[in-house]
Length: 259
Image 1 (tube, rainbow, N blue to C red):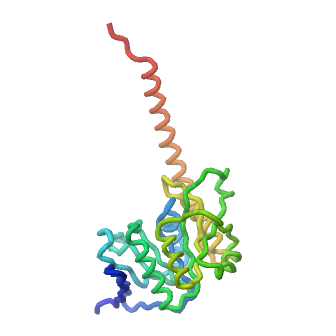
Image 2: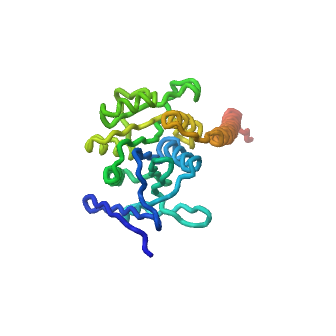
Image 3: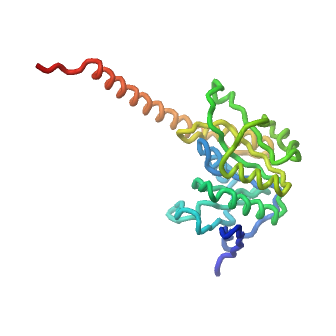
């Protein structure tokens, strides 16, 4: 029996949402979106939410314009952009970086999907580049970007610091712009993340805020453990690089003598 397919066509680019066998979209008021950006925070947070709440995959997205990519779980290939459901919410995530030229059209399709299924609120997980102004991870703020002033109540309940001026990029910006155009309440939850390596610690902090908002029990200890291992590995790499540079500088300062 073939899987059910629903197509969203945008100016010649077709996104097919392909439902798993015997799966359908449950009643839900909220859609969560997590895509890899700075520090891979959006993707890490989405994956942890899926695992903690044991969310069920209901559909995946196919597009001929996507790079030929498959993610493998237990030996089985899956499309990188997938929909999940659980705890009265729907989640869409990607395991690949969406090409910039496709971000607006994919966002348009996701917003159409949300509206077709009477979603009232969208929460977007993402990271923003670390400015280095804050002293520690504990002091990192979670910033908010709203699709419209209609989402201010949600932002207040999430206890976010609203970005008054600035710029965001990637599919998160496209989702917020599309939500604005269609008067759909969307909130971008943004936290500063490491730009050169995954940042599960920042993802954990973001998830803790979301858990309080939705009164959910989301396990984040494993993310902190992953962060500590990554930080230890990164520190070793930096030390090794510094030692190698010192050796090079020492040899340059004392060139060999010939005669």
